[in-house]
Length: 254
Image (cartoon, rainbow, N blue to C red; front, top):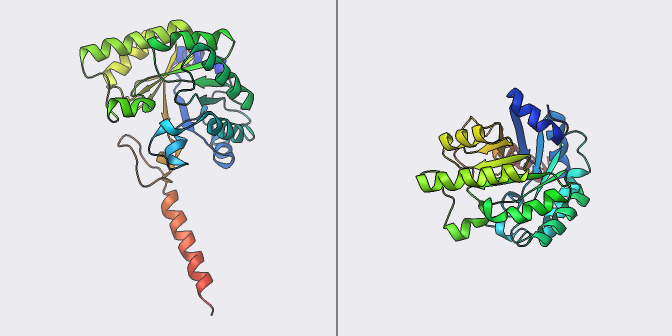
């Protein structure tokens, strides 16, 4: 069980799997922390599963700071990672300023999407002493440009680009790299090549860890769930049942 980010390299060396889940609010973060999750991610996925936006591109720094602070108020053990949202890291100076704001709000590390083309931003963050997590493969913030959510690593050209991104992040000093929606064999090869811990989501089982959007895991967002996410509870169904019982009781005068 991780209690600090500095344990990640040793976890990888020992082959200890890492369990990561998203958290956006005080009660959820508290439950996940008490349950023993290794890392908590305040993800910009909150745009969809909390705020009802069509994708993550509408998430702002103000939103991320708000939710990061809420999570920080309760977490006692698990390190907290916060996403840098869309267009919050266009330049190294902007990336560093916003990373510092997330740390001030309570993040132990920050994450941004992209590889080789964002190395100047990443070096600025790491150079300031802020732990950094990378994110390559399918990039939700690029969904409009790419015309949807597409599996990566299907062609030799894509494989070469993914490996180049992973190696560049690793050499820059990333502690971990999220591999999203990548062909499993490619994710396995990336995991073998880099010192950083790899955290897969829809990328097979051979990464150093796994991350899921918590509403997908607990069944609290029933209107959409990616095919790789197994719901282990039915929070939405139980909520409907409880509320319907309450409404019926209120309407019953006997």
